Amino acid sequence: MADAKSQYILHTESVIKQYKQYDEVVTAVDRADIKIEEGEFVAIIGPSGSGKSTFLSCCAGLERVDAGHIYVRGQDITKMSFDELSRFRGQNMGFVFQRHNLIPQFTALENILIPTLMCNRKDGSYDETLRRLVNTLNIKDRLHHLPSELSGGQQQRVAIARALINMPQILFADEPTGNLDRANADEVLDLLIKTREEIGQTLVMVTHDMNIASRADRIFRMDNGILTLDRDYLDGKRKTITGY
Image (cartoon, rainbow, N blue to C red; front, side, top):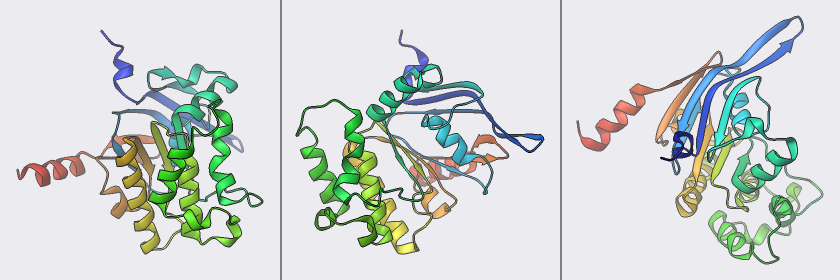
């Protein structure tokens, strides 16, 4: 029988993340459990400071947890060394931040290809993936421009391409539309969903925007570090699909 943890692309058990603030210990994530199946689009919502971005960073291996376990593709990333985790993250995960975090001295194309340095693949193995991403994200004519020569929406498209160039099985997105106006936010979300459908990957997104969260398969709420499934949303979605 297969390990139950390997049934989920992401599975966390009692994750705790704390910070020391002056003389006080703040629990940003309080025993968070989540199980996400391959190909799902899951949104995590909650007020500012609720711990949702911290939890996402822990799941992506960008921050170490103080307690608990995080399994990605059945592998416990909390037990990996820094080098092991870096390699595993480069091969299996992508991350889109609220701020695009592009390197200003690099062109759009150079920024997109940065993650490929982590994976020892043959030259040219990214050509087809790059072509598909560039066409899907409509940035073909901007590849040789610096970030300062791109609009906010174009910069975020480049950041999305960078996150997807290694064809990760799971994409983490932290408020990816937070700095965009409504039109650009909707466009970026459409692009994320389109690339997710084409590549067949899992999308886990932190957002405060219910217009965006409502397009997810499931919504989780984070409040004071405690993560819960939004069953009202799930029940409402079932009724919409089944008519009952």
